[in-house]
Image 1 (cartoon, rainbow, N blue to C red):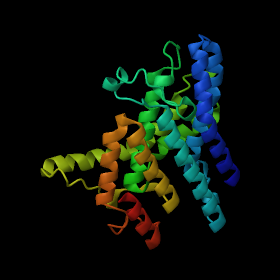
Image 2 (image 1 turned 30 degrees about the horizontal axis):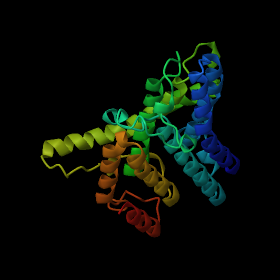
Image 3 (image 1 turned 90 degrees about the horizontal axis):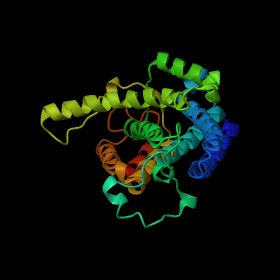
Length: 287
């Protein structure tokens, strides 16, 4: 787990530079060169997300029941959540549509950031729309981690299918869609949370109280819960996306507000994996 954690940290550091160089190749009309760079990046993203969401199916969690294994496993999960944040940053738009014309002359330091605006159009496979879909599902997954304190249980059949797809090593150069293995992991993870969120919003609307959003935590099963460290990283990710990606500002703000109103430990079955000190720290963080 410690070696995997270092690998995830390296992937986090490499993602933005790789995407910037790929964008330069597209801008130079070198579509084949861009694709040669892009495919390993997609495999890298798939591998890290598999570490976060597919470990239960692969049997990784069962082999880490001792205290040292749990600590290393949590460190790996924290690194993966940070990587998930970077994926959302890179695969989302920096500006709202009405802001683009006004800020066209203003350049940010691209050495420290990458967004969909930095990706030139025209490549037959690497499109903004395909990457944006990944970013949206990754963002929904992050919101779920914050609101639920962990990953909502995913249908085991979907997990098995995603794990099989991930381990098959699809040959993207042979014509397969390079985005499919990543979406096979992210979509079930995001939809598992969105189902609960939709039910809560429907109950809120039928009750006539705009401030009565309540998740039925007694009926929410988690694939894994977050420690204080990984929980804090998830909160920080949502906070950062609210400021750096205006397109996500409203959803990020609502997510944090709802969790602040209904913090960990407010119900008997919520925050059971956290100590009292950890719950207090997370509540303070949310405020």
